[in-house]
Length: 558
Image (cartoon, rainbow, N blue to C red):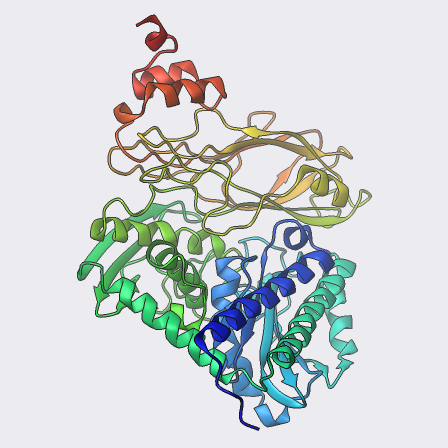
């Protein structure tokens, strides 16, 4: 049967409906997930792909590290499993960091989508699992096999029959077996929902395949993205950023070349791979570098194969941004999420006034567990959880930065009530961190202050992988740097930014997340906005005087 040709209006309506379908996938995953970082913070992706493995729609809910790695991952599944052998109730799974989302804790699933008995495409999703064994979710592994259970691409569900042996192995290799089992079922539900809704959609429209809409979406998005790139000044632009690293600082170096309808970012010159698990596979580095370009250059074009095609990311093998198997990669986000600011540094030279100042960038992710390690009290409640918090973003060319906001990851912060309901932890304090934002005509966003302890007066293992503790976000166009972050115990001990450490029984952990840098000369900030910041408690009177030369009441006296 040959499908009728859809009009442009019908294609646009269908395009919007496909986006709604993948958004329903994402919401289904959030509603059914066990892990708080998925169901409360949205650490996931969901998408629809054509028979060539090209992404044609992605959910708005999700993170760049999941969405943009997923965009290139379905092809790996098609290389292993021929189309003619697929069944409507098959589901495939992997957590291979180099073929999925960059580390073992992210499961990616793919399900064939059939309509009227014919294969028409694929639905896919990714989400984070709390614990897959090994050393735990931290940067201390010496290779990827230290970091947990490595699952190559395989058939999780074969013609409707679940691989129970795999589920048994999965649960036996996790410190929270019920949670990882539930999250795997939630992922299965997500792709099933997308497959069913896509078939229903085609029946409503009266077509039998995705060929016409897939070509339309990808071709339209690619050409529009190229048109926008062609308005930029041609040339090569450079930027460097020094970051904390593990035992010593790392350099992230980029050269961005704008040519005919294409932007190429090359991370040659960046530091070599680390001995610890902060390395980035190229797929994850590409995900965040492309996201930065997409935000700045083509924010209104839906994300799909066509929109991403003109954005090319390169890095030398075995550099920190292109680590090869079996490099440890568990905390790849601590490097990958810094890359958008490196890309923005290049873009600022090409198009001044387009991008913000530097911000916190990487999540302030605090994986914690108790009752397992030899350093903790085995008689207390066993738990493994992950607190996700954020610092401030950089000031923007025409607006202040956003406070306590995850950019570029988009992962929403952990709720106090949820953290306390799933673990024996107490969050004693959570508030904006006064004076943490870099001053500027448009100041940076503020960081946070958190105080955390065990409700059982027991020690806690903390697996930190944080940045901006030694190297602050830098201001732009005269703006001042943001404040550094820190981890401190109530006895005054300062904790390291990376590696497993123990919070002793009876001690509280104080977390100060970094502030974003300012944009523009602080002298150009209006007295009214400075007074408002003081009234809201965002900056102190002393900071207003030192950073802006403004004291409360001066304007009123005049």
